[in-house]
Image 1: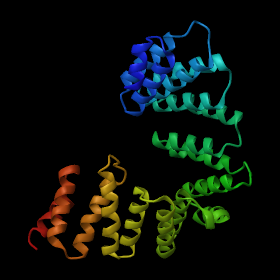
Image 2: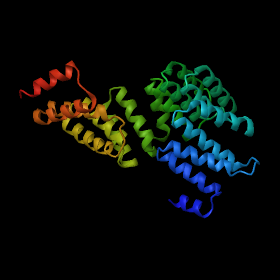
Image 3: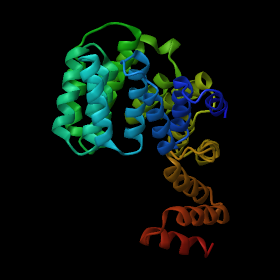
Image 4: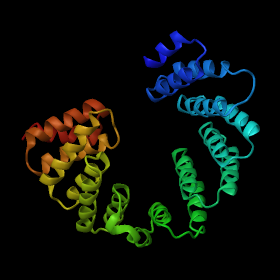
Length: 306
């Protein structure tokens, strides 16, 4: 509303159009965002400027978010032509290619990005995540392995290498990397440490790490989920239920991550605690959202006789 007021005062205010575009984009109103960014670009005097490049970058992000991958490819191509070879632009165009199903073109751009910024661990990780999301995790694994050859020795690099070892399934190596900052680790690192211990079957250490993550980061859906699953694995169903319910409260704030698995495990906890009435309600709520199958039908029939 403030940007709209600015535009009523000056219909050619590029900064207001840009601001509106960002606000619309973050609000998920992508068509309106595109209209605002294009209006901002139309305010240019015909001479390329840093403001114009910035607006194009936001437009490319909007196009990617709304699924207009060809539009995003064109936008990032314009930026590459105007600004020269920059790792970020190659990576972002690579993502758009991959999401558009052009895996080879996407990897070519990602490889170019890495050739321009070989020491950025997050770039390797992001290339992996992009390919994994596209069902090409095996191809993405090569980026993780290549990242391990970088060889820097900073807190950030140890954390990144720990995440890479975790994704490669080498949990002891990951814990060794995370150990460099174990005493001062942030919530994200502590979650990784907890997941490593969990994967190695050490649920006590896993629970300790997740508890520290909760202290370090405050209420956190990922931590509640992991603590709930950890307690479930330790057969402490009452404690598992407490964490899962806290996590499900957070999903009510518009975050759906892990919601399906938490709801199912919540119902199992009630059943293991022999709280059959609550278990039946929980399974019925789960089925209402995610549908049923033969196993669930059998479970519901059993609970209705308790």
